[in-house]
Length: 219
Image (cartoon, rainbow, N blue to C red):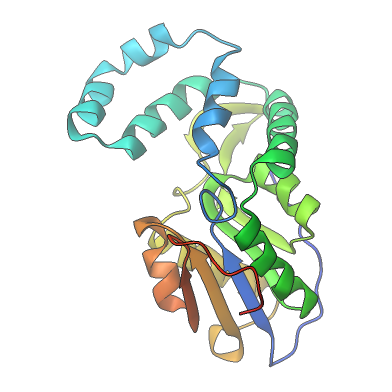
């Protein structure tokens, strides 16, 4: 199991936390599919996907991109050394930080950081490359989808649920608890762009849907 490194932060009862979704909130487009393509380029996918043909056809028939993504994830990660995954993830994270960040939302993130707020990415993307982007942006922590690893190799499964929908709230609450913070003791801003962020935004004091461009000024 991969452990995400976080920065220890001094908190008070008046702590403000800003929770940002990642794909198409902090970035200009989805980052998961390019990451899967990057890993898939290192191995042949045809046989693996064919062996999972029923699930694949079900996903295509229902246009269920999350199920289809889970099939591809299983194929590309199964048996792969986690060191290799992390190396490719670091390269992917650097490319995101250099070329794929959304300027208006990053300006808003910068405002939170300038105010001394605690900032965390809460995303269904993979923590391996989100950690690289978080370090680049000076973000305090990452709550994201994790890969299951046994004896240094990926199993093809996830270590717990995909971090979307209600799982975002559960995982963020646990992240806060680890820092001695309870929901009622903080002011929570949440930024998201899709139905997968609905529960997190409903949980926030200040929910911000970023389907329209944000003003590049302080909230």
